[in-house]
Length: 249
Length: 310
Image 1 (cartoon, each protein chain N blue to C red):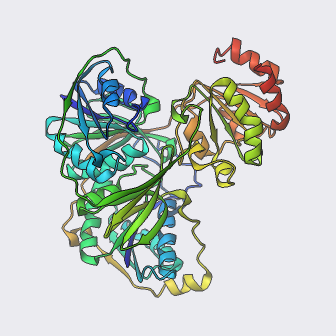
Image 2 (image 1 turned 90 degrees about the vertical axis):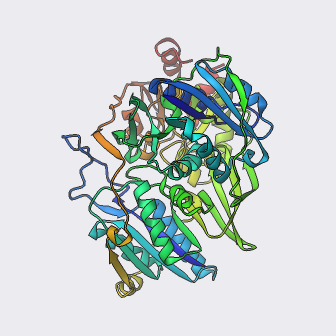
Image 3 (image 1 turned 45 degrees about the vertical axis):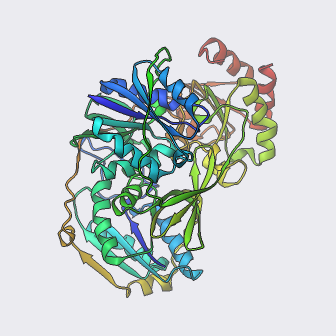
């Protein structure tokens, strides 16, 4: 199989985000950026499929700023074969990204697209489902296990209350959940090798896709802060307060 | 304005998340219909017909909807979409799976996981795991929206809407159901429970959950949750996880035991009405959001608490 893995450059998950004082968004200046953790799991899964002989080629694509090349190089160091950056400095939305990915899929013709279930910046959880819809392909979202069986793929999905397994005809789109795998760290020799792997840079206009947002962001604000309360000394005092002060027992 | 609310259910019972999504629909304003798609689930349609303020229930009974697969269900939603200005569904795993597919087929940019309705086209939604709130205005003609159920009150049940059969839509036949493994529990569902007691890595094992947490949960009629660390350590199954990458809960009372309070956990429970933290580390960040904090060894405090509850 040929695999396509889309990855997004986002604020590192360990960074505490700061809302800008003019409420226009979140401060991205001088903040550590990384590959979206769910996408890292997607890259890892693709590399494991290649190592197992289920897949032969892995193409990594990112839609984002010039610097998203860092994230593509990381994926190449993890074991992907080839990179593609579609460069845009503008904020993107899932529908626009899915439309652009559709054009890339039509060009690259992968058998399977594996991507994160959501990006940890906008938390939309949409792009994989939208891409599957636009391509008329099946979707296996929130995957905790992926297996190729009899020409189809079986995806075990994390759903409310447990797990659901579905079988998808190929080609298909799969989105990853946290427990699918633990991504590897790239070794230094592989990081060096990744620098020589091919990475194309293109423009959204090369695909004739309009990335104009449909949602207008009116403001971004801090959530209301929760104040810490009191410390109690004993379990008895706790139960008393819950019964008589908070009235929740 | 006409609004379609897509019901959440497992063929047997209607989920409370549907009632909460109806409240969000009422705040948008307009005629509200509910779509119940499933297999042999007329009792679910009848329950939906009782929700206050509902005009009619659309009932699609067919094997292709039995397991809530995204491809046929999205096709059904799209086949009904012409009659509606907005389509809403709770941001459950089914909602998250199906709605973006329907939205893309309708050429609409979905608004995910809203926590407030500011205007019929303007919504508030958390971003960055709830560390910022974004207010967005949709410029699409039709709105496709998923609703964070815990942010809305449940609509009451004093209605008597009519139930109308609808034809199934063409099944694209791309996927098939293999199996489902659901965790069986006598306790209430995490996202619907009035009281939640959660354990962290400090519990140390499943046996300690069983010995120390479960008896208290059963006395309180509470659901049991866990931090990601406890889930990753294998003490309890995945669907116990409260947090940004697990379940988002907002009960009347949330008791966090041996949980330090990582940002990702706080994102899943900080909207609870009353938060109790029991932790032996008095510097644990969980105390910054707790209404009542008890600095204590959980292995002593939990048996005491169990006893005190009688």
